[in-house]
Picture 1: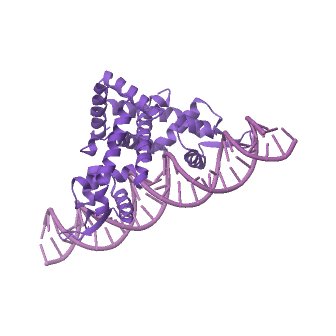
Picture 2 (picture 1 turned 180 degrees about the vertical axis):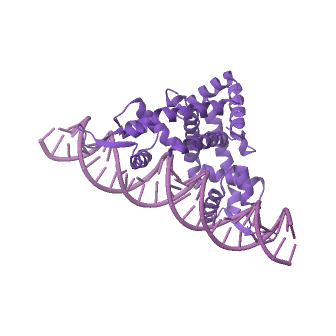
Length: 141
Length: 141
DNA sequence: TATAAATAATTTGTATACAAACTTTTTGTG
DNA sequence: CACAAAAAGTTTGTATACAAATTATTTATA
């Protein structure tokens, strides 16, 4: 590869960085980061999940989940409750404040998606989405 | 957005993560990370650049560049030499060891690119590359 | 059923990334 | 020329990410 701008690792990283930074700026009004947002998003779908379930859904390491939950708990957006069946496990619940954020943060996220994709045509967007999904899920490679 | 799997921030992040992890595993034989590799790549193109030039090419913050250079210097792959014209500036040079890595690391990178893209057709790859480039460079959004 | 293996979560250490503050030096302006 | 503004680099603090090691608990198996 002659130029780094031809490396897909680099291209993906920079495209991600761009969208991440835009979302980060918009979400900052609520003191929430993009990664914290996606974790909250999973909880808005379903409350009371185990940490390990969140990790597998978001494809994040256990240690990363621990840190994320620490900060979200500190901010008063979630709480850990011990599981009654399994004493190794915490179940993660939204606080009222955590629930309140669903609507405004989803609006911001939708807006960011719309803006980021506004430079493409509809057919292009569908192709990109399909390819990123395949790439992200691919077992090997 | 109903599901996080429809958010482009999430999709880009996970696709990046996949390629990054593959490259990280392959490069680990040389004790070099993917980000360190791209910095070295820019130096293989041209030696003696300023830190700020590396940062603008790689679109990385000055503080990030400082840390990267610290580690690469520590590893004996680069060295900082004071600029004669401008006493604020270091010029970054490859060591002999840093030069030696050009060929083997580029081979690994090419291989990773080939493997990561092997799940797509040629036309798809061209579309992806073009879109990621546009997205990454886009001024706003 | 005793015990090895697996699981859930955390802790520690390393590597990106960026923001904000700071130092030193250079450039631009009156 | 003096002094404000800009630029280069570093430092500090915060937030991802993961690897490896650790603890506590549960499951599987001999």
